Image (cartoon, rainbow, N blue to C red):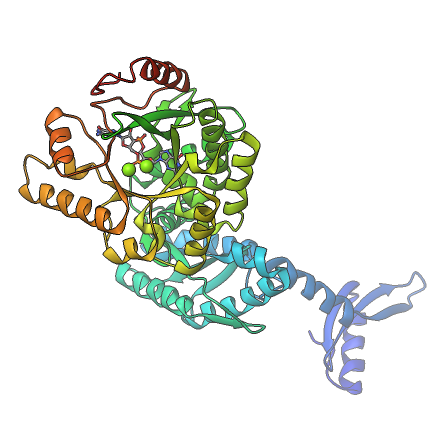
Length: 500
Ligand code: C2E
Ligand code: MG
Ligand code: MG
């Protein structure tokens, strides 16, 4: 029964309430206000009704309810509401309904936030939300889960192609630059997709699987989407274990360097040793750098690890005869760090190693993008006296323009050419061409992966300057290097074929 919109209605209604002997609380909407009435019959037969305008209190409660379920920055539903609606969709799955869950994560948000500040980061998130929202459909639920993480619930999607089309639309929409406070920002987005019921029938499993698919999309180079696949769990779990272990490896002293000799063919002695990382874990034995360096690069851990490698290599080499150099591998990610030059300089200064005794090995991939700052750092390092080598030459684009873009001191010919020397005639032709190129550009050449006398003879014939490979020695400990160099000094006159 309503209290009525006008005075007469109200009086009539009040009489009826009294006649029925009703008491207690009643809430009424009257002329746009919310009124709470409390009816109290008195002992003497009288009647008291209190009227309280609770409009503001109601609005306040409504606001709190809204805040609890929405993200304050973007006004999108938050994780609480998203999970509520996911849970609400669960019973439908049992009845054969279909949904898709998309986990959406920005690719380079952290660096924007760190370099340009949080207020700009907030504005970016607002624009991102608007753009994401624009890519969704009427019935979809877009939520911000926190940070730069968003989620999208697609209802009534029974075909993966539909979910893929939306994911693709999102990735595309986000690939365009954002303009904020005069800054052009390119961030990009990765998306992981789980379909229900096939990829799970509870919110929890679906969210976890969409997240695993997202992780995969990130590892596939970002700005892409990926569907959940069975088996992903185990593979990603392994990666995550490596990632977590690697974070602690430095502090726990689990990293160590081994050194592999590079033999000068004219000098007929060890001219240089390449420092190679090893990671000794308690539970999984020694892990190869080919397995953990990519993860260290993706997580940015390579910066701290690389600095440790530099210092450790310089410190070790400082104890060697002064005509023996040390080579250190640098990852392209280390060049993104603006302090790389200072790090190298400090490592040399603190260990007392002459800059001319340090060789830094880089790969072609470093020169693929963002050339300018990289070349500047390389020139600065070279001006210091440090030598720069092009590692694994022949495996990437092998563009001659890379060799022309910087005066490398050394080209290291990838070991895949030595492996194919016998089987493929063109390998020898390529080795020959690279050595000739090095000679005319004033760069020395090193053949990697020399395992047989035959290979040695072939590269020697072509005029290669230096060789590295199991024929001479595998990578060995720092102690073994000391012994080997001492032996070399004693036998300096002897022709050096096999050092180990
Ligand atoms: P790389 O720089 O090309 O190093 C040479 C790799 O070839 C080493 O593998 C070495 O053990 C292997 N090798 C040497 N001689 C032979 C041979 O005769 N036959 C064959 N089959 N292999 C030979 P390793 O130590 O497993 O390192 C693999 C890669 O990991 C390195 O390739 C380098 O790219 C990377 N790496 C190692 N240490 C570091 C580091 O401290 N920092 C960075 N950024 N990368 C590193
Ligand atoms: Mg190398
Ligand atoms: Mg190499």
